[in-house]
Length: 139
Image 1 (cartoon, rainbow, N blue to C red):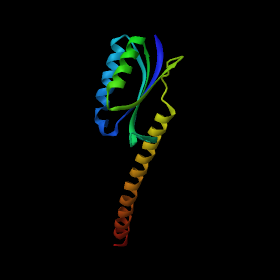
Image 2 (image 1 turned 90 degrees about the vertical axis):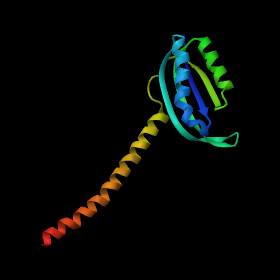
Image 3 (image 1 turned 60 degrees about the vertical axis):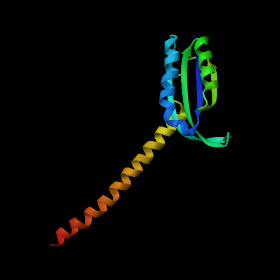
Image 4 (image 1 turned 60 degrees about the horizontal axis):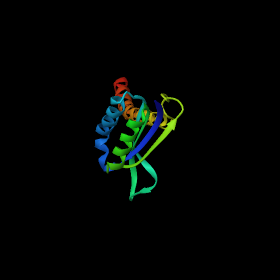
């Protein structure tokens, strides 16, 4: 079996269907004795250029090991699914299981934003606590 990297873009209005689509594609690959080495849902991202007057799309990337029959079936599903606006299938030499740099940066950005929000919530709470402590000391 050969190794492939698959990236497909889903229409932003169909983002809620992405988990079901992923399960369907996983079922096809695993049903024909293939393996999924990496699956990353990059979420809704800005496109580099408009596609069908769309400026955003939902990105999904998979690294799989599959036979040609499974890849042909996936290609047909991509072609006839109106929600998939673009897809790319690349043959790779080896299985890639480490998270992609794009996925890592997305996780890091979300962690940074979460930490900033948490710090922002704590700062006003700490500011409110200090005057109360000072008033008690003054009495």
